[in-house]
Length: 219
Ligand SMILES: Cc1cc2nc3c(=O)[nH]c(=O)nc-3n(C[C@H](O)[C@H](O)[C@H](O)COP(=O)(O)O)c2cc1C
Image (tube, rainbow, N blue to C red; front, side, top):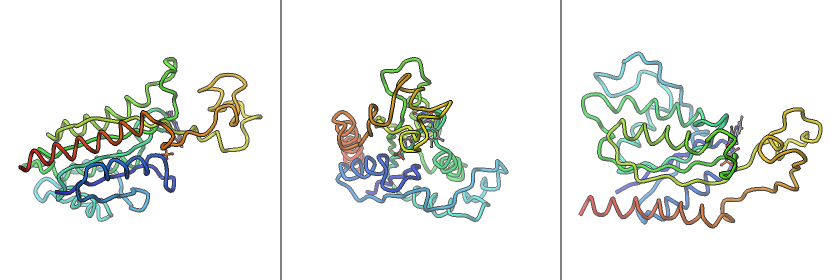
């Protein structure tokens, strides 16, 4: 039994990456971690060239990734939420798995889970629901492909403005947008996954649940 973990976060060893690795470890099964930034994956061009072959006609890394996912039993995706929706690497990757759908439904019955890192604070109800937008995009992909969605975990990420160095003079700083007038990188602080008790618990539970469900399925 194998669980594939795919991270859409481009940042090296990011919160999303570390959370995903923790979830993979918690499954207790054989796993593989994939960082989409290390691959080239164009979005689906809706040509239907994959219908008869279950292989995309775009000759990039999307072919290899689809094969890896096809041979796995579960898929956990860690994504982030630029402009309050699913990041584009993760979206393109999911679109390319369309090749696995036709006639056979190769994703059917596989287990799935999502980890969403977002900068919008959970308690701020005035801002767009970034977590729900990211989670729903992954969950609906999995449901539409006949997978079993085991759940999602939320990780608090960091608005990029926290490290741009220009926030004091910026007319549209994300710090002000998220935390109000007068917010500074110092007053906001940096969100680190391992320091978020709830997120660590949720991520571990997600991994354990997927591991448990897979063992039950195969026994
Ligand atoms: C171009 C851009 C736009 C962003 N817009 C949002 C947003 O609208 N809502 C949000 O919650 N986070 C937003 N973020 C913040 C990311 O969700 C945040 O950087 C996240 O912590 C990245 O996760 P990582 O540290 O695991 O890479 C944005 C980030 C970028 C780069």
